[in-house]
Amino acid sequence: SAPTLPEKAPTALFCCCSVLLLYFLFYSFFRGAFIIMLPGRPKAGSGQAKPANKNDKKSKPELEDFIKSRDYSGAITLLEFNRRTGDDNKQNLYWLAYAAFHLGDYRKAMETYQAVLKIEPDNKALHTNVGCCMFYLGQYQEAEEEAQKDDTGSPLQTRLLFHLAHKLNDENQLMVFHQKLQDTTEDQLSLASIHYLRSHYQEAIDVYKRILLDNREFLALNVYVALCYYKLDYYDVSQEVLNVYLQSNPTSAIAINLKACNHFRLYNGKAAEAELKQLQDASYHGATFGSDLMQHNMVVFRNGENALQVLPPLLEVITEARLNLVIYYLRNDEVEEAFNLIKDLEPSTPQEYTLKGVVNAAYGQLIDSREHLKIAQQYFQLVGASPSECDTIPGRQCMASCFFLLKQFEDVMIYLNSIKSYFVNDPDFNWNYGIAKAYNGEYKEAEEALLMILNDKSKKSPQVEKYKNEYVFLSWLARCYIANGKARLAWELYLKMETSSESFGLLQLIAHDCYKVGAFFYSAKAFDVLERLDPNPEFWEGKRGACIGVFRQVIAGQEPKETLRDVITMLRNTSNPQVDHIISIMKKWKEA
Image (cartoon, rainbow, N blue to C red; front, side):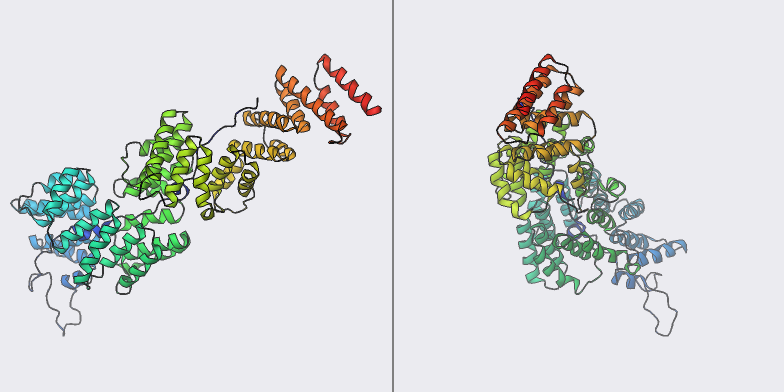
């Protein structure tokens, strides 16, 4: 019987394996949720902010001017200068911490607040400020411990602990602090951000729109609404809402980043990168706020370029950095590294469940583990059968993957056919589509799908060249060629391969499959090479039967007489007593 073809689970049936995931770091939400109270207004004569003397052309810049213009880098420069000149009072430290926090230098802000705590150890509210800084540094456990030292029960403390409960997956505490939220703008913003983080995007939109009805001057809320529409895949709507904010704040880092992400989804990585490059302009006062986010997304826009340099330091800062690094490892065949990076992740979103499914499928094949393949199948089924995902493209991809691993290929085709129009030129989709068709015996359609990969001349997907040189791909294409009466093309695939265990396997496939469909000449050629490589009696028996099959086809006029010359040559390569008898019969018929 013919050898079983090697199997391969879907490689990029899943959108998250085809392209790097694109997400946002939710600084903007948290900045609405955590509001570090402004220090007291700088007083005239304090050395920090004095009214400018109109007659003094060389009056030095004032702190208040920097704060109003959000030039926090300039504010820090002035405050540090004041410290060096002896004006190192408590008020100066408060402003320094405030400016550092809003600049995005959370470590400096934390250290400054800690310095103030040494001066005012009884000011318990400062522990919450320190906790906010730790939150942004990804130190969630430490932030919770620090915030609990605050005995004031402030709204800021409640919001911080609310978010920490979410980060630490403490559902009980999450509900406790949810109940403590009040009907204030800050608390409602905090609630909306948690809705967002828990993928309840429509609920978040409802909260933001309710706030906007009463506070139309809160233009930044349009960014939050746009983020939600982005997550709902309404990229054009997202951009339309975002433009309202960009008209008034064209230099906003978060807004520009979101615009770049919309362009990435609507157009391509180059269009997105062009938008994001604006943030590298010196006119942004050297601001570092969101710089980690920009670096992360630049890796995405450049299709994974510099992933190993940029993503590892961001693993504890940006949740999606871990997911994207896993995808990078998968795309570079570093399956074990991908598995180790994601194995302890508890999935909470469809994308995370899908990615864990992909990794377990790849790892299960790598180590031949049925357990991991079963886990992968379950993850795919969870996503594909969920009410929120069942009618989406990713959801249908997941169901197709689930049935693929269960080897229920008729069901696979139901889902793949429903989304085929979206992936006409996608090599990963064509790979899975072709294999599923071949398993169902629909070799003509299978060949068409696989040939779209073989004939793909574009350089956009490194996966294309990888497929063309992969044994699994070549063996399935060879089987399709043979089933469709194109045995010669299958033989040419073998001739292009270098001698190896894989080429030996392809020879066996060609020998057996050609024999089954009556392509005896190429079956004989394959068995002839196999016999010379390994003098196994079974290969002689196969070659003998194939050669006699060619002889019968010549007699029936299905093959030209000249073919017998090659058949006789192949027979003479075997030192078996039956050879002379077979050759003599062929020659007698030829001479008759």
